[in-house]
Amino acid sequence: MSTPVGTIALACRFDAREWAEWLPALATALPGETLVRADDQNHDPEAIEVAIVANPPAGALQRYPRLRLVQSLWAGVDRLLADPTIPAGLPIVRMVDPAMNAAMAETALWAVLTLHRGFHTYARQQRDGLWQPHPQRRASGVRIGVLGQGQMGDAVGRRLRALDYRVMGWRRGEPLGPVLAGSDILINLLPLTPDTRGLIDAALLRQLPCGAALVNLARGAHVVDEDLLAALDDGHLHHAVLDVFHQEPLPVGHRYWTHPAVTVLPHVAAQTDAGSAARIVAQNLAAWRRGAPLAHRVDRQAGY
Image (tube, rainbow, N blue to C red; front, side, top):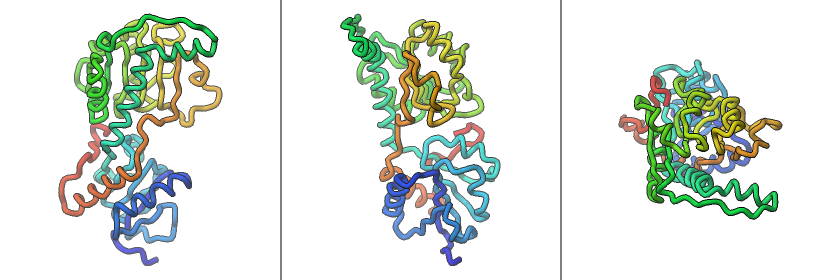
């Protein structure tokens, strides 16, 4: 093998369409760099110093003994942190892209408007041929709780406040009870960590006002499915908008598919834009090579 030293390995679980999108975007943003696919065995592992990853299988990076930097193309890094073969001191950088923040804010805004104005109810009425107007609330009378006050949470809060919604944010270390008690709609944008796994359970849901709604745009493992379904079945929760699940794709026959009070999205709340993300990767790589501090380096203790 004659792989140039400093070559970048792309360890990504992409299908053919995704590779066709990402390879040109990364090549354009990283001119002069040598990029190789990690699933292509025709390169020298000793030459790899940087890996650009998107949910690689566990153990995929252990074949690179000289690896010095891991750049994730996704915002969530819980799977990387769960891989015991990645050395504890190896820097991991997560993707923070203003384009993704804007997309997440758009999805959250759509979900809130739909829940606030009862458009899910009107969609069901249309299927049943029922003409039945319902009372209309003003946005200023709708209370929104946002779990997670990172860049995405801030972007969501700004969008909602601009339409006069009453928004309360919550971050780790603050009292959670007042936010739950004051949320007609609860939006989850938390990172998945050992502390937040299973956080949205029966005890948490019972602290929401009767008739509240849940919007989960973070990770499926934040939610205890059986507890959420029970809260929907007994009417304590009015509706749930779910973009993420314990198993993806959501298995055929799962109750979420057919539950009248659940809206299922196929993990599309904020898809990564290849062109925008590739430029951010290039900026991070340039900073690393200069010896400058890495933006959005993962704090392994915090879990994100």
